[in-house]
Length: 82
Image (cartoon, rainbow, N blue to C red; front, side):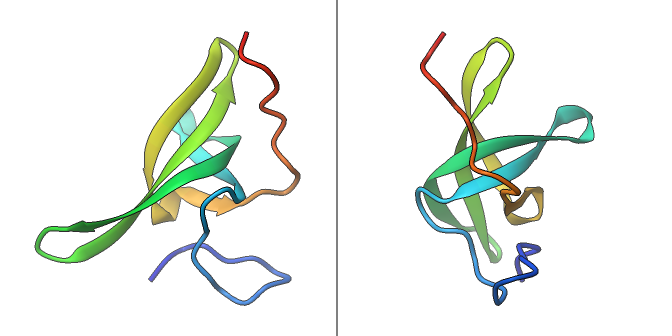
């Protein structure tokens, strides 16, 4: 089950192009947008999210497990590429 919940919505999995926050190294949260949703089939099925987010040194695309993705508190401001 996904850890993705929102106080104003029923529990649903995030979708493509949805604004989210992702937990990055150092237990910090960064605003981003989902660019892909993937189901990984190994010994079990897991969902991972490819998210475009911005750090001080530019835009980054990362792959995140469902427990590291939460609804955005506000729309991300990715802005133009530096």
